[in-house]
Image (tube, rainbow, N blue to C red):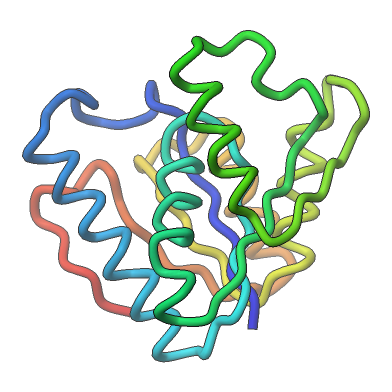
Amino acid sequence: MICCCTEHRPKGFTWKINDKQLFDKYRKLLKNMIVQLIDKYDIKKFISGMALGADTDFAETIIQLKEQYKIKLLCALPCKNQCLKWNSSDIMRYKNVLKKADEIEVISQQYTSTCMYERNKFMVDNSNIVLAIWNGNKKGGTWQTINYAKSKQKQIVYIRLDKIEDMEVKI
């Protein structure tokens, strides 16, 4: 079984990313959700789109759990120069994840207007389950990916960023 994750960039978080208490709760929910997915569905591989924000959080959590659960991480890059305009600390984090990935799939050799969408399609098409870290907004790439996953009849589980304060992980 394979699980991909669709999620928001930092600006899509419904609370300030520097709110340590909420950020810690979100990271704990993310880790608990991944462990529950492994336990319930025997997930062996996880796919991250490697964007800023929750994509990177997801990938780092998979790396943290790799040895204990014998799982693999596939990084699906929309284009070779994905991190070209990022700041140096985000680039360092990105490269660190890529070094620890089990597989890397590059969708496009260069940035195109559709490479992010093609990356998202690739992730859904190659997964059984989609973890959506979603803020409730019915616009943008995360919402498009959720709808694409629904059209492909994929099982979707959610972490709702707009309800993080009250959320408990249950799948």
